[in-house]
Length: 391
Ligand SMILES: NC(=O)c1ccc[n+]([C@@H]2O[C@H](COP(=O)([O-])OP(=O)(O)OC[C@H]3O[C@@H](n4cnc5c(N)ncnc54)[C@H](OP(=O)(O)O)[C@@H]3O)[C@@H](O)[C@H]2O)c1
Image (cartoon, rainbow, N blue to C red):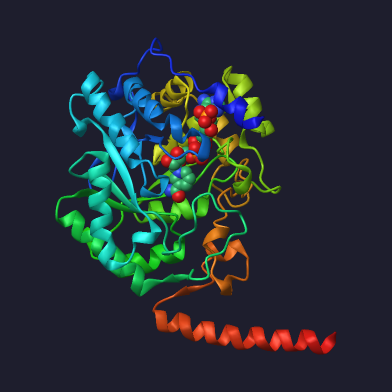
């Protein structure tokens, strides 16, 4: 029933007026390159895959110039076809008018797989280079597309720095070869970023980290750390991803758009809640970052982009949403993480998804991890034996 209602909402209307792309706010990355703050997302769970060609084409017609893609979304070729069609129809004169973000999938992080993965991405998108190439996740763990929330891959491992650096050095080589303009990370934690920055040269540093950020999950501490390192933070699920499939939703999750403060601000401004979410994403912390958002309706595609052309929220409204930067005053932030990443967990995380994010299991080398694994396994055996004795 929900599925049917959602599909009925898909609506592309070419009479909806486009926005001048030059009116969209930009940020200057540490490299000096300029990135439009609003990125059109091309991932949508399951049902919307059939609409990504039309949605991406419509986004380009309406004025989006930053397109967020990933190998994991299994639609780079569809996005490539939409870009080709946009050129054919004259929505853009050259692909250089677009800022394209692409991502290296976890399954391609082995040294020998990185270059072929980027080649395949470039071919599918129909471009010679991408503006920004992100390493999608810090660890090489994969899950079956559409798998259940409790699915675990027995080969999953925690963050192993020496192996990550091999991947990163391959990404750097591709940048130096001119196939990537800027490099960045996604879903990095403070600990994994500190290790990366410790071991890379000045021209090998990431300039962007794409991470989950929405009004009920603002990630202030982490974001400020990245900013202090001149890494621009781009927020995904900026509206709280209202149509996530059931397998990615948990009873603990809260709905950003139902937050009373956010609703009150929407009423004061006479706008809908998504407008407040995206205005927050554009204006937060001296307009230092950006957002990724997707939609499959022309009116939403337009209104979402419009938020990146203006500063709708007053400073008082921003403070009500974000707090004033002093400890303990974080506005409406509720630590409401939506992407738990539970399908990426390794055995020693013992099913606790927080371990993925709290840096409690980071390893310099594979040998360090194996040593920990052996100790953990001995401890697990002792625990099991004690349980049997007490029964
Ligand atoms: N780096 C990563 O690991 C990562 C992880 C997750 C996502 N992402 C990126 O972030 C993008 C956005 O994530 P998301 O789609 O889950 O979250 P989102 O952008 O917060 O939410 C998108 C949903 O909001 C609805 N929507 C869009 N505009 C609206 C409006 N103006 N009013 C009411 N509803 C609106 C859309 O509905 P309809 O579908 O009906 O149009 C869509 O279902 C993805 O497409 C992907 O590119 C990256």
